[in-house]
Length: 124
Image (cartoon, rainbow, N blue to C red):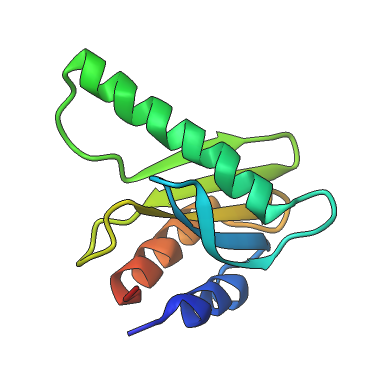
């Protein structure tokens, strides 16, 4: 089992091209932990902003009457991927992992696979 710090370290080291990672509570928009980032990639700001993305998608699904759960949300920029993985395992509902990747160095399919693996090990 991973605690927050171990899970974030695992994401930074096991996922090629990772620029930064955060564990976020989307009811408050607060980052419970961050690792990486830069002057240009403020993970606290990203956590709050991506909380709005998650809330909007949840509301849209409700309005459309769509069944099922969101696994992840992908935002593709010219030089980066931003991956939001909503956590469903054990007592982790209301949380998401946010991962920023260098598009030139990352393998998106492997990043999604590794993030899913980290989710199953995470115990908050």
